[in-house]
Length: 247
Image 1: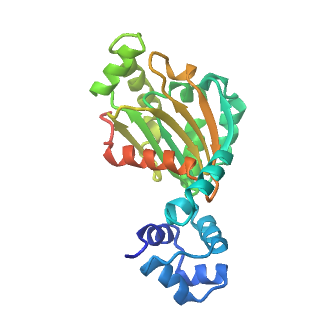
Image 2 (image 1 turned 180 degrees about the horizontal axis):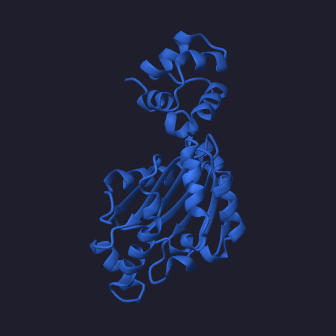
Image 3 (image 1 turned 90 degrees about the vertical axis):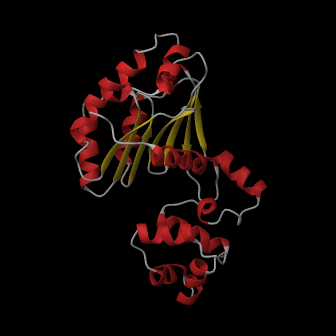
């Protein structure tokens, strides 16, 4: 079976097998076998290819790394754990957004605190114009999941829906910018995810607590790690089931 993940990653980044061969100093036919026959490269080659396509080794070659080693590396992906999301320094949010060059992915129900940064729309637009992919996922204000979450947080059935509509109105001006996509989802959200290239802040949801009061680990992707990739794949699953908002 071919390695479709590797094939897709190369195509997505406009990288040819010949370029991979040159970078890894192997024969182009060897690279073709990595793709068409799912041959597993040596570790040094896996690391080089993963860096080229900005994907993790565990994503490109799920069975290549021993579980014990992957667990060890994944622990090193945790930069810091903040006891509450509101404890994440404002400067950190600014730095992560400013440094991002290729990927900004946000998965929330509301994310209203993001609207406190009046420069965020301009920054997202500039990044998209420079080739970055911006994907913003907000809750569907008409979904049952939103009503349930609002009740669980003891703030009234329609409160979160109203907050989402306000946040959507804020981000609507960038929804027509090439490279910026906005969607709404009605999933049961277990974690809010804020990804900026290889950095990510995850905000696990705790029953009975509003998101700002729940913990927020700061992760940084490592090629052989699995933790960052788990949340990244979760984002992808929600994205694929989401729909454009009803402005």
